[in-house]
Length: 130
Image (cartoon, rainbow, N blue to C red):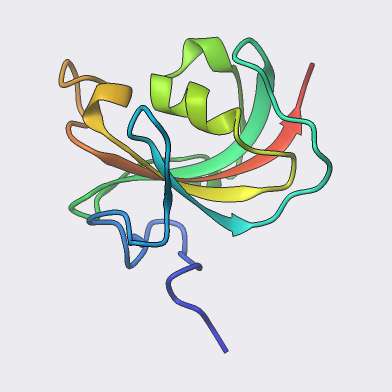
């Protein structure tokens, strides 16, 4: 049986892309997240860590705007060089974990550049590189 809420194909927005469902965890900053697949171990990245991830991002209208999955190449970056919602959210994850984040505009691009508004990302933390 397929749980359509937890599975999204690259390019196809998740069913809950418009707004976080009631069963998410919300941090003090307003970041909402839901674990889609458990990871392994207990080691979490720090704000200065370099990580390798697969991800897909959508607007709340369901438009995909970026995806390492579609490109077929995981992304590697330092958590201190990305939007605040990613810096905060990735620190909550362990390797192998897949999480869906609803990132409010104030933790994304702050209305200064597109995509505007709340953003939704499915992120798989492949590896903590440090």
